[in-house]
Image 1 (cartoon, rainbow, N blue to C red):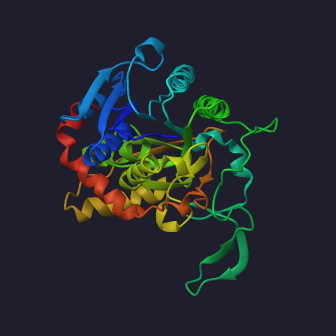
Image 2 (cartoon, rainbow, N blue to C red; image 1 turned 180 degrees about the vertical axis):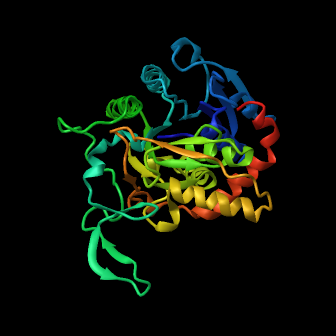
Length: 349
């Protein structure tokens, strides 16, 4: 039984997700301990100033540095270093288990292999679409596409096993390791919730593909895109995700020992390809009256493990929560925030 939660530890607390979650918790009268090694670019700028905020410079990969106290933990720490992820995740899981601290493990949609790519899709000018052409057309002459399977996206029962022939990235494998160990420790008495998150974007974020596209446009710089640009992801605005994390903390008995796939969902208003993102950025630039010089875009082949389409099936979590911010509105907020901070961003990129 989870008692009254007052002080929350956030590992990776100075990262994109951690900083946003910390802001929401502080606004809701929680105390926050932000634990971060500041290795991510720009993370040193995300250390907050608030009477209920404490920052500790530490590394989850070094277990004895997790000599910290709190009533709850949100594990956001992650990197591209798969070995570091595994070490850090196991240390945090054991720390929470040994100290009886309930926690949220932020896993990833990358735990799902490229078996996802076996779902039938149709290629259009700017994106892939789930399903096959029906032979019917809309009044505007656009082919009607329907999918008989996974038309609402990937749910929590989708295969995570490679079945001897499907693969995931090393990053995905490392997150899957933490995901599995969290499940196993749950069976031993740990109280944890696992969130397999898709693409999340917003304020305090600099290192993802969307930030790179937007910053390149604002600075008129060239950029390379992995894949052909038609690959599609659902996109979740950070404010919507912050609300979900707060909801889980305040109602943890409802969520503990469960796994949820989290993202924008299969509604087209919450999905985007990189080609569509480029067009949206052009529109946002014009709406802002900036008229920056378009970036020179080049493409390189996608890795074999990449998903051509990944949409989150929100059926399980929708009992409690649904995203609100459509892609265009969220992208506009992010673009404006980057533009407001572009001068000091320019000094670091």
